[in-house]
Image (tube, rainbow, N blue to C red):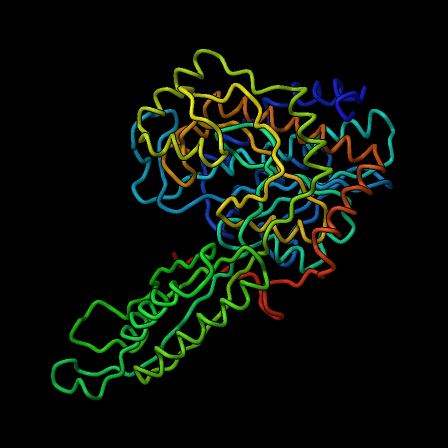
Length: 477
């Protein structure tokens, strides 16, 4: 049993002693929310912590200025901890305030809790590093500082660049309403810009001379909406108009741009659906006598879960129990919960297929299940999971009912309850990493499970050959 490892008390003690510095790191990143590929201050904060803890540091991974790797140890297996630190646009919110109160209206905010995500992963990696040093055990631990999870697919670019080629096991987590093992798969997705070019003209005097790029964008939207009736029900398509062609209605718009996100449970299904969306764009261009160009900005694969690693982590969580929340944590969570709708609260329980309870904070560990469940969203952790056996935890850092990508997540991001959930999940990840580091049998079982789930399919990057990280393009929101 992994929970019987005599080294666990030492690793957990290391985490407890170093946790104050890492909660400060999480708060520091919360205070400088930066979006997709723009995480300069956040990446610098993580680099400073890596340097202070004695890691060997590699920067500009996969030609991404805000991607970095910290490594420690020599020889032996390589255990990777995946961190993130990107924020979301438009979710600015004051900390510990139980009403919507932006610091700066329409500014960024950590509405998915990634300020906690990177810090906990780095804390777990640091505990394994210190354990390797104290015990003299052969092995290497790495922290991967990964930007742009929210729509930028940085990990997919890092995988394509070979950054995970020699990794034995990868471990990550995500803030949640509950603590436990993430056993759900995710949707593969692709982010594509369609740019239409027409011909400007005076919209009243000579409208017949104009060819409207905005008309093409609108017709593409109509076509994709009709296509929804004839695509698999578990696929998703979303869009946002980035450039409507100007603010003068008396000018026929010569340029317009729309960004689409296409999702599918499997990578092969995603590729097929992308081609159908492209045909709709071509049809819109044909109808309006405009030209269209498509550019794939980012793509991620579906997540492959790993039973041996999930079972090992489940055993560890059950030996640990939930975070040690106190009465003040519960009181704050109750205040947050008062801002949520009954539908919000019901959805959180339903997502885990649990019977709803009158409970503000999770006082239990999610039970294991063997069903094939979809989380509904997408993550670039999926690409890592295709090339390395990967396991993820859920950390209880939010009042039950809190939905991700909301101001309520930002409000809880610096709270004592979030810090406790972060430290707790760091312990679960570190213990799982220790189990994988010391058990060749577990590593072999994890690799066998990955090969079985891939069904002899080789990993094919969803990002086209030659495409570079869309650092400049992602500044357009």
